[in-house]
Length: 201
Image 1 (cartoon, rainbow, N blue to C red):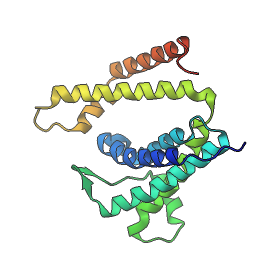
Image 2: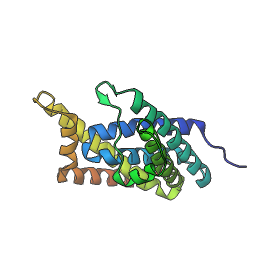
Image 3: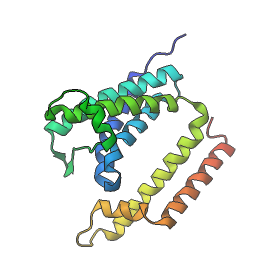
């Protein structure tokens, strides 16, 4: 029986793509030019998880396509939400690809996000469908969650300091070797325990 694409996964994946693209670029300025790529890849992995390769790839492609359209429209007509600007920087190597199509400046962001979404959403969907990579995905998610926790913890300490910004908290964690080592060790140990306790199947 042929597996059908999942509308739910596509919608959730598109939502992940939209918001991660904005939030990563805002909170981690050093990764701003790659925010859309990382967001599309993550959305694709989610959309392709627990699916066959063909279906997972289609889920990822559609999530990236829909997310690119909606995210691009938001970036044009909605300047910011709660002080967070809805703009996405595109990595320089993507610009020639977008410029192949004759487009006006007003829809440049839409075309950029659609192309990034299709390429990296589809790739993420394919990888997300590969069962053998579940351990790697679990490790990466745990590592990123620990980094997020470190940034929030740093923010709690620095909240009342004049001139403090969220970017400073994330930059502190991402440039602190001890924090990175602890995050990697934490993710590795929890991943091993998950397999030993048969929590990952």
